[in-house]
Length: 132
Length: 333
Image (tube, rainbow over all chains, first blue to last red):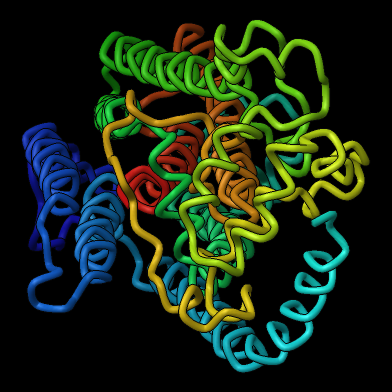
C-alpha cells in the first residue's frame, strides 16, 4: 500500500495493511450524503406532471440514492482503495438482483391481463351476490 | 512460511517479532490474513444484498402492478421521521468509518469515542423506528389481513361520533361514510350502495368472516380506483387514482376512508417486512459494535491489528446503504 498514489493523512504506511482514510475525507463524504438526503426529499416535490412524466420523481430519488450508495461504498467502505475484487463481488451481487427483479417484473406484467380476466368476474360475481 | 513450523507451541511471547499473537498459524503474514478476512466479509455482504434483493423484488412487482397502493399507503408514513433516521444513520456511518481510521492509527480513545457515538446513533435509529411502529400499531396498520381487524377501542379509528364502532365489532367504521361516497358515484355502483344505508349489517356481513376480509362491500365500491380490470365498468376503470389530500393530518384512517384502494394493506405488508428486516440488521449491528467496544476498551486493537473493527464497520455501512434505498421507496412517493 506504500506505493498507493491516493495516500492521505499521517498514516503509518509501513504497516502495510489496509488504507487509512483521513477524517477530512470522511466528514466531506458525510456532508455530501446529508446534502443529497435533503435533495432527495425536495426532489419528490417537483411536479413533473406538466411534462407528462408523473413517474419521474421516484427515478430521480432512486438516482440520488445510487449516488449516495456509491459514496458510502467508495469512501466509508474503502472500496476506492480496496482490492478491485471486493468491489467486483458487490457489483455482481447487485447485477444478479437487478436480473432477478427485471425478470420477475417482466413476467408478472406479462400475465397481469390473464390475472385480471379471472379476478374481474370473481369480484363481479361477489358483487352480484350482495343484497340489493 | 519457513518460520512457522517452529511456532507450534502456544507460547509465542518470545517470538512476537515473527509471529504476532493475532496472526492465525495458517496465514503467512498479517496482510494475507487481513485481505482474506475482508474478502470473506464482502462475500457475506454480497449475500446480504441478495437477501434484501428478494424483498426489493417483491416491492418492484407489487408497485409495478399496483402503483396506487403505494401512493395511498405512503401518505401514512411521516417523511419527517424517515428523513431524521436517514441522517442518524449517515452520521453513525461517519463515526464508524472514523472509528476504523482511529483503530488503524492505534488511537484507542478515539476508537472508543467513535464506537460509543455509533452505538448511540444505532440506538437513536431504533427509538425512532419504535415510535413509528408503535404509532402504526396503535392506529391498526398491521401487516397482513390483520389490517382489516377491528382496531383497538382507544384507536383513532373509532371516532367519538361513530356509533357503529363501539357497538358492532366487525361492522366497518367506514360504513356510513362509504355509502355516501358511493351514492355519488355512477349508477352501477349506486345500486349496490343503495343497500348499505338500509341494511348496514347485512351488507357488511361477509366482513364478519375474518378469513374473507376482501369481500367487504366498501372494497368493491373502491374498484373504480383500482387498477384496470377490477371493475366491469370501463368508464370507472379508466378513472385514475388521485390523492385528494396529501397532508398527513387530514387523512382518514384507511378503514374509514371511502377512497381506500382495493388491498390497501399490501403497502403495509411490504413496509413492515422490509423495514423490519432492516431493523433486525440494526439490532445485530448494535451487538457487533458493543462487542467491538468491549474489545477496544480491553485494548485488543492496534495499528497492527484492527480487522474486526474494519469488518464490523463494513457491516454497519451496508445497513446504512440499504436504508438509503428504503427511505425514498417508502417515505417519498
